[in-house]
Image (cartoon, rainbow, N blue to C red; front, side):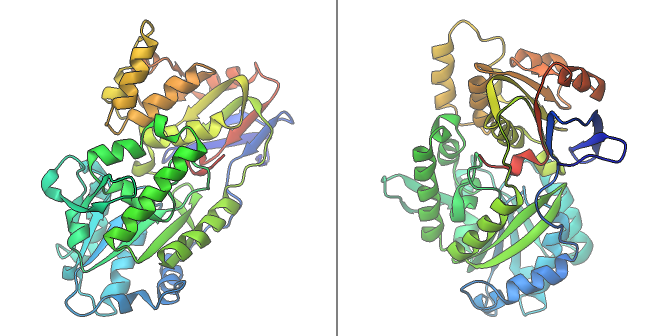
Length: 405
């Protein structure tokens, strides 16, 4: 538990928001992870890539003339620092930047701007940067069928590459969208498949999540993912550790580190406050859903949940279904179960949790829009303080999007 010297807790969320609330014995605060922050990214990357797990130095996987694709999870912390160092490492070992392409698992163009600037400042126009579009059939390639005879489609640039290095975040096991070693597949596939992996109805049980993890692992193998770089977050857009090597061995090591970093052993509480920190890639409805799920797992019956973000995205089609929809709950559930949009998961989870809890949101979304989804709104720390005074117990979760069950 963490408190500052003036008996106030500092709640950091978004890229720069800072609120203060009084500390107290009835408040259990987990504002940081149980880990150190990695300051020297260049040295840590050198160590991870040159001495990977169950794999030779990763540059040996690339022969002269090969096209290397870095398949990047946009939620990776400190990505604008990490990615140029990663390209430089391969370039110094014989792979020219012109032979390196970056595919980001996001079709949001604004998400690419910071990465594009970071790469261009060091490599000019040599590095090609592509945003994966799950709705563009020309940008997808059929790979195989999985064990359920369902087709596996993956980004065409990734499939056509000579060598692929997935670069992804590893959060705590038991997290809402932790799909294991092949998890980045969910960001690089077609809309239909992606919707099944990011839908609340598919993630409610351990059994269904296990099926989806198996599907992701199969897809990774069929696509030819032999190695990986996984990043364990430290919170506040910082890195705790880097892990590289053979796909499964890398994930096992990263998962153990992430579980230790984000272990949160607390009793169920009447009030749970979940903070979503980090930059542009974390201020989204998906990260909000991941944090809300972590909060709900630590809430007592009929508890109140608060999620603090700087997300400014307007609700998509699935979230808009929640707007003042009280008459036909069965119809709403059927519609949410069939939706394929990226906001289907947060919509389904919000609907589920608001049946049991009062849920408040701190965000950059307009009050009337948030309230139409069935959520309360908190505009400032004074309002949060007043809410906290109504409860005898509270839990505060920093970097809640990384915490599992």
